[in-house]
Length: 273
Image (tube, rainbow, N blue to C red):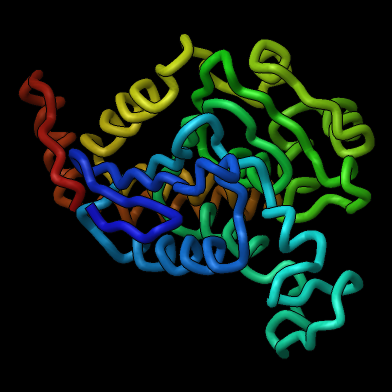
């Protein structure tokens, strides 16, 4: 297990488990944690032994959003409009810095990312959960686009993600009111894919992730990429992209094994290459 003070990482049967580890702050994300998560996911993109990722939180929360100390402008790291601290050039161009970049990395890691949610998933935490491929939550889950409750407009990609995961009217309600949805309401709204008993979100997410990890991971990753590209592409563009992705996957060992196993009427043994 690789560990830092604010997150843990381990690999289990091809699944990389990333656990936010600030339980005393309900896993609120500060600048340092966000920076380290971006770097972790950037590295995971190239680690072939990790085929699927599970994102979860320690203790009583998935992630309660941005750390209030930073959001108040009271930390050494400046925040535009709320502190007199001089901003470095990087932050002047991207005020939310690694907070928003982590949303991008969840998508760009090029592997399925599964969220295991217990307790609050709010603000940036909700954005990170929505950026995942699938969300497993137990009955303690509470989801909220919390930014407006603090007087901020939404960030971390939440306005792009929400109307694609739930209905437009629900997305607008959430970003306009900051209302908290309990687990049942979030499940009805489609924000939670699998609702499980208390304490079972991580085991359920791990079981699903291990099934994916045992599959033809190159084909799975390419299929994921096609679906995400289809959100902004035309039908003609996606038909062409699928043809290219299909050719790429056809050259893998797993494609040869899959077709051979089908002919031989047996279960394929995929190796992820």
